[in-house]
Length: 476
Image (cartoon, rainbow, N blue to C red; front, side, top):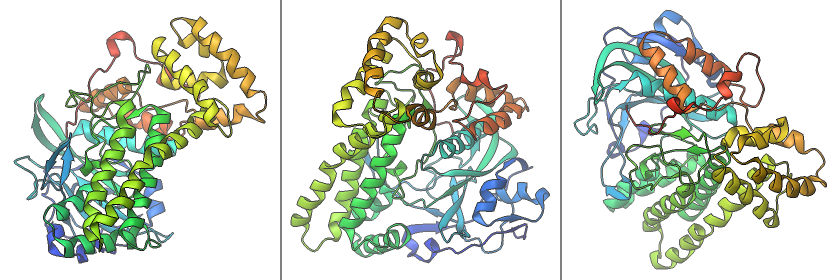
């Protein structure tokens, strides 16, 4: 598998780590690759130039390798729904290599659905079309919403069928871009084996790549905790539910990764769960701040092995972890404050915020539309009992009296468009039938989520009762 179809400035540092970090192997070629989408804007920002559009499909399917690629599958461990699995890894993905962008940043380029690896655990290593398109749409929407996230560079159909519970389904491959694919579970893999030389090599690599000013494990832990606290606060401000916050799905970079059973809420409820596999609500919307603290405690447990005095380090590491809930709350308060027009929300504003959320839950109000309607008008119409909103509104208007330009704040904080679950399902169903127009339309509209767009009002509509998506699935 050779061929030069793209000018990709590869510089593959992960492949220079010890061989225990990965298995080198190439993607498994597919039957008849066809390009579904290529993210030209992202490619340009990465310094990737397409020389031959027709050659993109075989390249992003893994049938050909660009010059400079160093394909490998990464190994890691992870807590999955609280239970520790000492070896996981890229079971359906291949890291093609890393790119140095024109700005000097280093990013990974990974193929998902590229065939089995030594870490597939009896899986076929493939992905079907639905989850590939879901991740493409939702990850790009998250980027447009301003949330740190992996991104989608390309999607390709394979001309092959994959077999899942639903039967035979069309196959596809996603090309994912990430600041890195280093996970909490990557540290856990070596910590579980008490392989301190490898753990030290991973620490040094992570610091060089993400936190060059860090002086050691404690500094890295503090930086990762800070990034994750910011990320989860953003999720909570947008009504986003990841659905599978295992430690192998928690990045050191602080990016949202692995859009399996993810969903944006329609009607607000703090304990909303969509993921079919989350039967006990471990990753419910309201529990996400607690889960990320737990996940960071697992990172701390791995990093403490590298400290000269582990017992003393446990004390300082515990302080970092225990500080996280307050950090998340503070950032959440600032983000929710802006959603209701407050430039600097204080602790005294928390009752105003939480009382609105309580009224929304009781009144079955749409999360996104209610907040946007605070500035666009008609927020009371979102509630089953508008009187519940009226009582809150009087307090809110009084509090807004001292704000300089609350409308501008609210427009910048409250999207008009999100990737709603029923629209995602409609898009997937159409694509399975060969119609990619809904996919293309969603990407086009969601690229500008904070701006009203002519002809797109239907994408703001909550689902009708028969359209409600009650469960989401990993599905890859």
